Length: 167
Image (cartoon, rainbow, N blue to C red; front, side, top):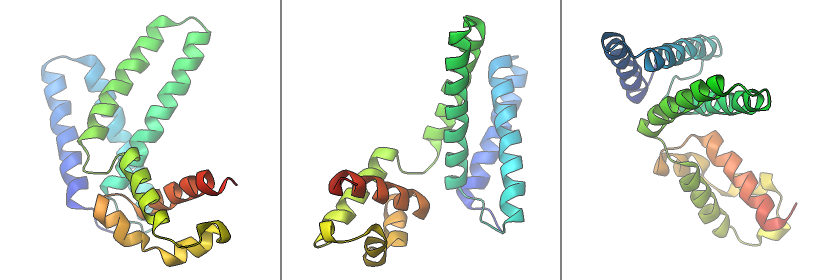
């Protein structure tokens, strides 16, 4: 499958930033960006094997996964009193967050707000199951409206539905 324009532009920006970090001898940024490029290339291989599209939503999901991994590492390093490694992981998180925020995708808050808006439009929500709601709501249009992936919208719908119904 092909890549989206936003995916390609983001990947080119990473490569350009890697070159700048190398010229500036900024090892922290250089290593973080190198790792991100490597992770994106691995993700591309997986997506192509599954015949899925390479888009900015896949990169955003990857970055969120990387941040979660770094936070887990920070917890372990803090427990083992390794302040040097905690600092390194914190710097990595800051760099990954910078790139995550630069992606043209909706924030978690915007996605959740859209999910609430969609659920409010559904009549008799308490008597329905989540699958019934999926049938009544145009998830693809909602995802397109706020620049989110349909999977993010579905996940947020489930989360908000459980909050409203209390299951």
